[in-house]
Length: 345
Image (cartoon, rainbow, N blue to C red; front, side, top):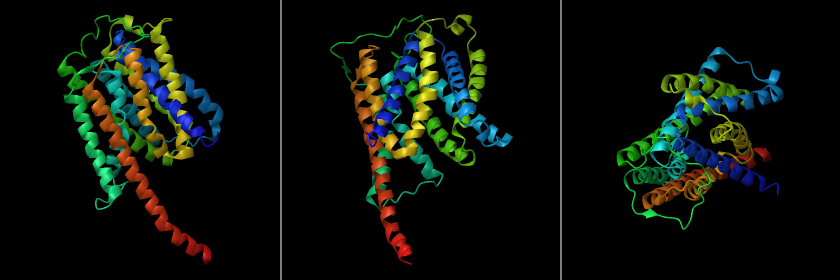
């Protein structure tokens, strides 16, 4: 059971993320303001994370300099505040299943940024190098397919409609417009680029500031302040700020606690045990669970173009990961004789 534990934990993380996408799409369909939702979500995440950071790290946390705080603040602006708001608009214009499909772009885009920043090397003349480059090309083709090709509608035999989906006219009708769909796909791509940059820059900051709980709490708090400023600037309707004991409150609490808090911590645990490649390999499970949920719970329709594009994104993901894994194995094998010689001496 011990060897299978990271597998089940990674599956749980992606299941929680899938629930976030479905709940977010549901409350946006109900007419909840995106900026207000993001603000409440970050407040819930901050309230949840701060006590853990104080209890488990507290005085042991590395002292926070002004420069490091500014870096974390700007990182939160890029990877959380702007990304979540843009992602929310994209979900309104498209669908939950498409939102989950484009998440598969993030590992590939992250790899592309790592190559541009010379953090990764690509040997084009080798088979693993060709696989990685080919994966990036297929990823771009998948994004184009999702954006410009819909195809026939694939209708499920039944759906449950477990989530309340009443529209108040605030966002109604956006997803049916072809221009809105293309804009939504573009915003999803922008979201993936921001998330990829967030991962790359986050890794650099964590090298100099390794206190992960404190780091995450500062990010949540910074994003909560930023999201509040965005919300009061964009949303003037006082009714949008009222939660009450309703479905909106459930979505805010779930996304704030179970995603910003629990899922992020479990994700760090899986990466520490098995590495980022293992966790990235499980990403398509998020897509499968979200598609099933969007069809049977939200009652969304799935187009053939979305299925084909999603398959291309999954293929691109595994192509890059396969090439990356093969190159690591080759490098490890090339280092073995040197290590043996050192042990003999």
